[in-house]
Image 1 (tube, one colour):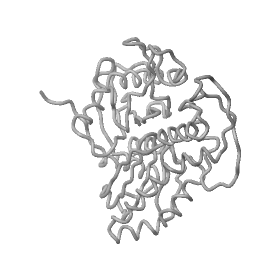
Image 2: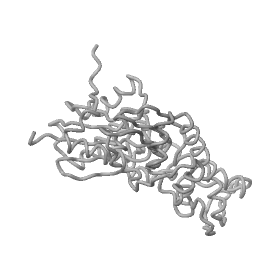
Image 3: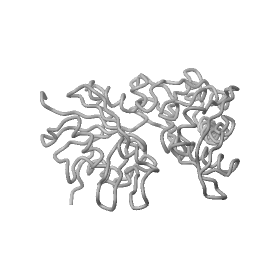
Image 4: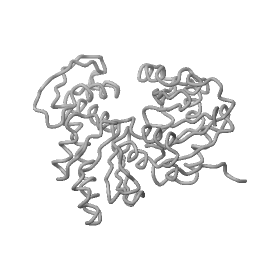
Length: 337
């Protein structure tokens, strides 16, 4: 339809990514809300800027937890705010394609319907696409003629392992390990070694700047934190070795799960995976040398797709543009009373 509004939406633990077919453009903002009680102070990127900088009576948090919607009302506010910037004429309704986690309950599915048919958004059609299918379409895997492919998505709080064959997800596993746990591990390692408490945002910056798996290059950064003994602010020089030790513990857990996952895979499919390699995507796949590290651990080539956190949104864009791919789309409807 000429005036139909189609949106692809990836609700991530850290960021919301939306594609507007009408404008043929993608938009990204942090999936966070700052509130004082029931009063909303800031949404999206503005709320993230306030994280770890607010008084005790103000909370800054994400409406998502481990890939699931934990607060429907707050997530609707985030989405409504972003859509208002994209297209002010929201009352005409539209069609939303969500990338969703695996193994959702009926209640968790309805949460996606409620997010775009609640207090502020109405009369919208809602469809869901399983995250690994969206990843596979973005990577370019031919789902119609697929003998067996393994996709690993390392996200904000979860890592999803999936094996796709004949257009279906035949084996799947989700482990609670991702970028957030890496940040927390860096914070814990610095506290243990230097008796210095730093914020999680600082831990994330150290990960992005100095996280170098398998890289012998050594560097250091000066950070400011709170002394664990005196409770006073102080500076400390943090080496890349400390940062990498924190990251490595998390990556080793992911690698071990990948190895066990492959061992449970049927031989004919594991043979095909060994031939074409494992596809790696997700925001936390940005860590330098992580593909080489996982490849050495598992004994299988790991292909860095380069799509990172935009992977699932790119898969949704393909579905919106190509109606022949709609067979992998499932509708989400309002619960009948």
